[in-house]
Image (cartoon, rainbow, N blue to C red; front, side, top):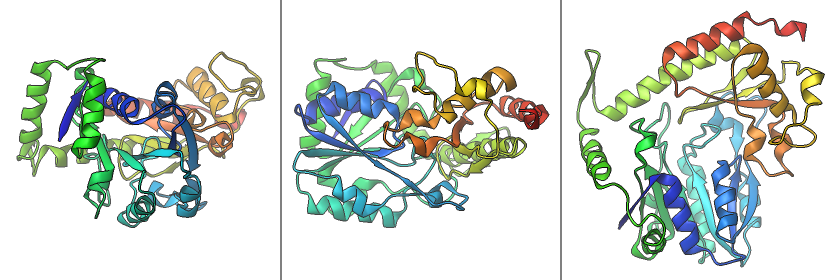
Length: 337
């Protein structure tokens, strides 16, 4: 069963409003896309956070960020209603392996009342490994609501076409809320994206080169952009934690010195005192002309220290923009700080 929505964000909002009662708990795996926490609160729920643990020395996001299954299961109580799962993962670019997914499914089997909302908006931006849709695992279809959208896949975020797929009892929760929120989304947009989803499976030609499908082209295009950004970060002694999916890179900034003046600043949006990642992001923006997102925005207060020496960079840009960032990072004398 399928319910359409005004983007994946709207689908998630309707799902949480339809599934949660006040006080119900929702497990969020940190770092977590910031919309998740806000929407849980808007539905009257309580977010509980389980952080991905860093494996120092690992170079890929898949290996660097590890989910402790015992820690995950220990966060589940009688009040836990939903687990939000996101793979490929924003902001890290981690793709949860089949083994990790099976571990999560084993936990779900032991907790009958737990529903998984699987956010898979980056499912077609994969470089290495495989994307495992959680609902495809044994016995998980009835427990999973899968969300996706056209925005990331077809680079048309302004069209706002998203969907929720799953068993009737979960999809109806989305549709029941949608009736009183957006009611529906633009029919021409839905029809256009429906056509795109069919044609995306066919051979695709771009600038004279033929790909097996549009999805193959999409992955190759973003892989090129990822590699360009990796080179840019390395030129500034920022160590990339290489993503295997999505279009973000977490960079280890521990070799950079953050000026004390930036650490002592206070802004309306920042933590107090300002965290290192927030201060360094402001420094890079104002002094170097390259902007990154401070990953502490994706953590709860008790775990935001895990983001202190990192920044999130995006490569959903044209290649010229990424090359310009490379030039600015390489030209700046960080040793003078």
